[in-house]
Image: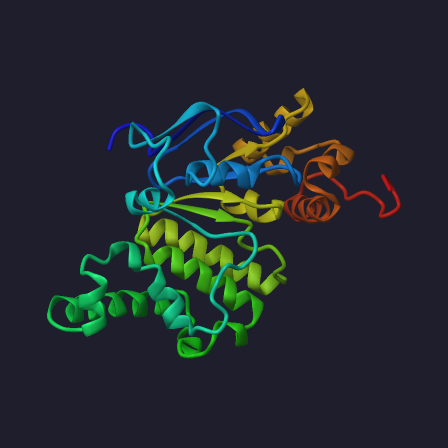
Length: 288
């Protein structure tokens, strides 16, 4: 298609006078990996909730393939081809990996609940087709050994993969990933980064990524939007991230701490150091 896949045009959202997001605009094209960064409370997840229409912005418009989706039900948004993961793992812990992934297929099922209960004719064929689709996702995310295990028994990093797999089971054209590597160790983060890139390149799915891990954002994102833009220095930071001038970055570390927190700043500084840049992490005692 010509034109952007998703357009967010000047949306503002508030709760009883408390502004969550103000006049946010961006576009995401087909096959693009777009990142949103910012401090806690900057409204990153509120943007996702607005796109999925869990929240209804008071101002602005959100367009999917050129058509406004404002006022649609969240399940209709999912059926259009927009799927998401969550900051906190939202799986059914006592159900198996296979069963959790099959839940993602529900939006694509066409037979009635009664036919499904009887498991006859078209319902049986549809169930078998959905199981094949889920098995492909299990292979893709390398979680074969866990397929029949209850999710509660899985290591944290594998639970995050299962949640990603459930979103993929919905056959999305746009995937909203809300802090997919939060709480992960380095090995788990690298695995998740690999899967995200594979989703983009092999499956052709566009991605919007909300993440505090600046090293990950620098490595895989095409463009970056900063939440809570308060100064020209922040704008300069976003421009540097967007054009990926890794060897020419010289930033105000205190500002970085204010934007994404100390831990992410330290990780970003280590990344820049490895790339030959001149940004150094602050002493642990600086800035409180």
